[in-house]
Amino acid sequence: MKPIKVGLLGIGTVGAGTFNVLQRNQEDIRRRAGRGIEITMVAARNLERAAQLTGGQCRVVDDPFLVVDSPEVDIVVELIGGYELPRELVLRAIANNKHVVTANKALLALHGNEIFAAAQEKGVMVAFEAAVAGGVPIIKALREGLTANRIESVAGIINGTTNFILSEMRDKGLDFATVLKQAQELGYAEADPTFDIEGVDAAHKLTIMSAIAFGIPVQFDKAHVEGISQLQADDIRYAEELGYRIKLLGITRRADTGIELRVHPTLIPAKRLIANVEGAMNAVLVEADAVGSTLYYGKGAGSEPTASSVIADLVDVTRLATVDPYCRVPHLAFQPNQMSDVAILPMSEITTSYYLRVYVNDQLGVMADLTRILADAGISIDAVLQKGTRGGARTDIIMITHQTREKNVDAAIERIEALVSVVGKVIRIRLETLS
Image 1 (cartoon, one colour):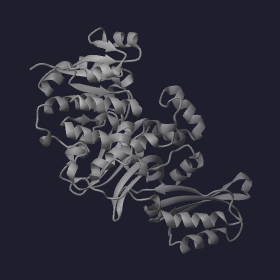
Image 2: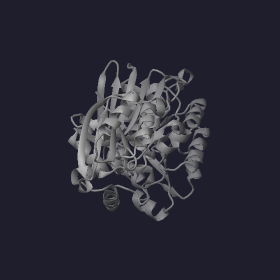
Image 3: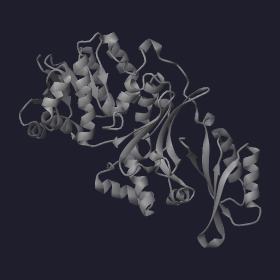
Image 4: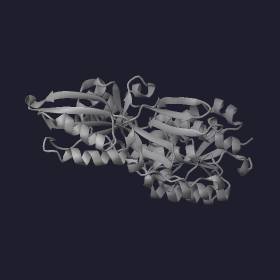
């Protein structure tokens, strides 16, 4: 059987890794796919660099539309990144009856519904394993491996940059700004790290996983997104003393009245496996009714780990290219006409536990005031830690609450901050036991 021909849009870190791994392992890949997979056309801004990377083994162009319009290309691999140009290219490839493989989580989080609908209409596939958690096959697990299950929740460390920063802050007691600079020098963080440190990248990935887990449309605009840039070294240290570690978690969960979709710093009991995921690694914990808890761990970024997922998608598409479209795995796991319109819950309706740190003047009656306000809001306390600071005249009071609604905590914090004994704002970090 003739090899299937691939057009590559972008040959940066992941694109170069994809080309190299495909060349290096081509014989095993051919045996698995049932036919050869060849990159025959590459679009790149720097033609000279692209020609060097590909060794003259394929045609190199600077216009990506030449690739998506080429009758010689069967599968388009989009590795450009960004929103609007990739959207136009992917939709054009689909209109030309070409299958698409992409690692672009931002594209799918914002335009996935439109792209999947177009692909469904044309009977082509859009594969995106590399869009979430790099080389960790979490999309295949959610779409296929756990098909028999009713998935209850997904919680993940899905951004390696922030996990590296939090690990370094905890291990070395450094502040956020210092560790961020180190991460940039080591290449873990971009020159403009906003998408990573403010939780946007993780929210893109979580939106995709939530859609697959619960059979709902991708709804990035409804996600609660909170990053780690305001996190203080004191809170990481206090959390450790209380038996917790702080991670930037993406959490999506079934609730009685809707679906939770949120990214924020989270206290996790230190004894949990996911709490011990360090450095730039990723991990995703899935809770399902039949199988229970499953944990997926590995490198969430990098040239060849991400290329591994891109090529896995290429093999899947190659195997299924001639299969009736109605016999393929649906893009979001559920049949398109069976998608649910369950609401995404606002944060005010989320129920979880909380870490609250209150900086107060060290005087009689302060603790009584705090406990009374929490009791009035229906919030019970699980643990308390008091730490003298700054010359002894003031102190940090740290409280861990039992589960309560976010709106109850909002109301309590407003009253606490109005106390004359309280200095500045209350620090609030959500807590998940993940039991």
